[in-house]
Length: 381
Image (cartoon, rainbow, N blue to C red; front, side, top):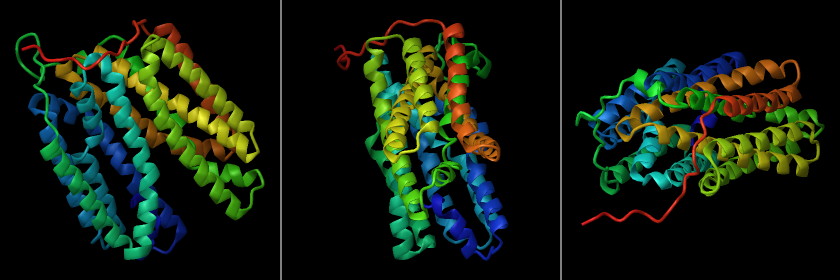
């Protein structure tokens, strides 16, 4: 709701030089995922020991305070510091995925993870529209306060509507005793972390260059902005559909087969997008890419969740989220560097990277049986 308009807010704080505005915006936006990537496994480990509900409530309460304080920032460094604190104490992303995986029976884990990831896709697609309306109606400072209210609503939902399942116990009857090293040693786990990292590098490469790419194709200023808005919306919606599609595919094929197939589809679609010039062709190819990348991402998280025991889900999904956040953080930098030479190469190199990941998965990933989904389990009397 507010982060897309951070540059304008920094200008309102008195920064007039465009270079300084860009620098402060980049630092402020990037510090949260950078700090969160370092802290995610640690918070996950704490969640495994003391429960994820309490940890999620702490994260949401912290976000309420951070957003409220950002409304009263007086200097750009205030925003940077608050965003760094948010990265340190929040970390609700990996917690929600872990909680979804633990709340569902094993055979329905893919559907649970996919549903949460669908919400994570739709939120950023809807948020900027609402934020733009709020900024125009009540001003940017008040928009931060509204964001704090939204976090407060989420906090109340978790507090009163979520029932945490009993924590799983290890072999010695103790909870949360799996070490970081043990989690990394689970079958396919490090490979799946690498896959998630690569998927995020490719998925997040569009942001800095898509408008430049469309303008370079000859679209006028108004046409370019409109088309880019449509393309980003189509990408988000189709990726959300891909998150849901993963569960259906895993009823019929192995996780390795689904990951390989979806990556091949994503690579082909991205390569086609790089050479497309007509608006309809770019829309179709980015839709196919979004659906394929969403399917691959949910399947990869599901595959990792299936090899991590439930008493270690918090730290396991913390590592997976760290890989995702690091990929998201460095992707804009890499795409910007590549685009300085050729914008089309950004998309072609992404297509090539997906093919490299396909080779890695085919050669290194241990095969697993299809994840057959059944009706919800009924507790025995």
